[in-house]
Amino acid sequence: MPPRSWLFVPGDSEKKLGKAMSTGAHAVIVDLEDAVAPAAKPHARILARDWLAAHRHNLTESKPVARWVRINAFDTGMWQDDLATVMAGAPDGVMLPKCEGPEQLRQLAAEIYELEQRHRLANGSTRILPLVSETARSALTIPAYADAPMPRLAGLTWGAEDLSAVLGATRKRDADGAWTDAFRFIRAQCLLVAHARSVWAIDTLNDDFRNEAATKRAAEAARADGFTGMLAIHPSQVPIINAAFAPTEAELAEAKAILALFDENPDAGTLQYNGRMIDQPHLRMARQLLGSA
Ligand code: COA
Ligand code: MG
Image 1 (cartoon, protein in one colour):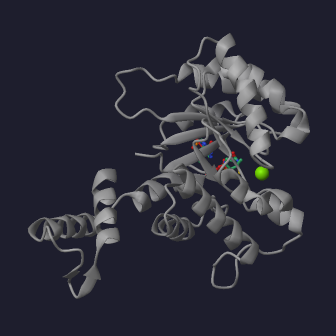
Image 2 (image 1 turned 45 degrees about the horizontal axis):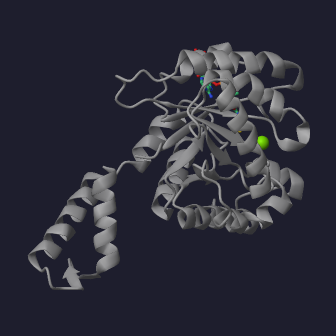
């Protein structure tokens, strides 16, 4: 099952790092980028490395929490120093912010390859997750990820905060709470390209984190639209996301009924179920749902 909840934790906060593993998050992303002030970056790298190392999976764990780290963007000149330190902690993956296309991912992968050798980590064990929407240019190049060879690519995700600053946009959502055009465009491309590559599609976070109803709405929309998971910034968002992505009893019952109906009618391509037409896509959806439960 793909990780559903992805919790950011500021890399310079020992207190929050100490809490991260007990939040129920499926994946924790230790942040070295925007959540950490420039002066705190060197210390945050060390804390991140030690946290990653302390929580390396032990093989008896049935559902290990994925340990990710967000490094600084390419144009900061900090990303190589970030990697040089944190790779000693053997992260499951590296998130690259402000990613401007497959070429940056290729360079990142080359650097990771060297560091995996140095730290005696299995070749290819470190995955990559780009944030593909944080500059206007990168938002226009999302389809380029569809075909570029990137064996480490785990998924695609996007963020609205940096882009709205770039655009000078004073709103991200309209009066009804729906994303405005630029963000809808990005979100849809992120979803489509991730599925085109069969990698995870991870929806962006709800920054209005005290508003649990808004997080619930966003998480339910993410799942309903086909995302495999969603970013979070506060522990209270984690159970909301996990619940929103879990199939409901009613959905499971319907999927079982659809499977049973096709089993009873092995020669039928299309059938009716509760007054609705069902055909092969419904059968595939039902199988997927039961497989993910
Ligand atoms: N991970 C782990 N623990 C967290 C956490 C996180 N992301 N966010 C909050 N906590 C902890 C707090 O330390 C606090 O612990 P305590 O009960 O032991 O005191 C508890 O959860 C409740 O936190 P709360 O007081 O409600 O939040 P806050 O005002 O301290 O912090 C934020 C609010 C937004 C600053 C904080 O949630 C945060 O740092 N989020 C991550 C930000 C980030 O990484 N951004 C980068 C990606 S956009
Ligand atoms: Mg940012």
